[in-house]
Length: 110
Length: 116
Image 1: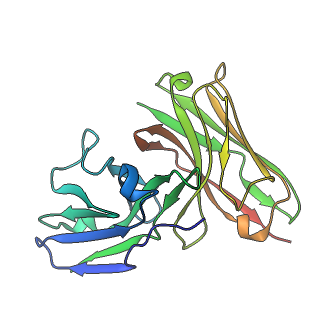
Image 2 (image 1 turned 30 degrees about the horizontal axis):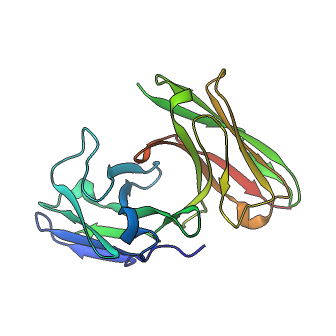
């Protein structure tokens, strides 16, 4: 099953802003939006946002999500060392009847 | 707190079988849809299977269709993944995940290694 497209890596300086992208099509991201998950090395993923910009309780306001057409974005402001992690987007694909993930973006905070 | 605990992973030869379990606690398991998601060593996340709260249907990734079966026992608050005809490419950490709008709660995962 075809997945969503994410850049493999992004590097930003401490306290700067990073914007991660996730590109799909009208059957997935463009249909119901995307969710974003964060995964630190050796740990399970953690949900950061769902349906584009809804945050579960306990998730910092520094994380915000949006969507434009078939592309979803996650913006992280005021980058902190603990934000260094892998970030995945996911969406339900109505044509595949399957959930799809992006390949993940490794965020490095310099 | 809300918790999912996977078990049943291990080392198995190609062509073999394993059954994974995921024990849920501190939430009403029978109210929620559930998933299995896997992650091969050094790779990204791959969705594997889905079952709704009542077990009425199942969806599978093409890569496991016909070989894996997802099921649940709401009386035991437990999710299962029966894996048959295992291949080396099935080697991964297998996570169970609860669904609320998306994959909102994850277990710690159980490692499955398929090797001769």
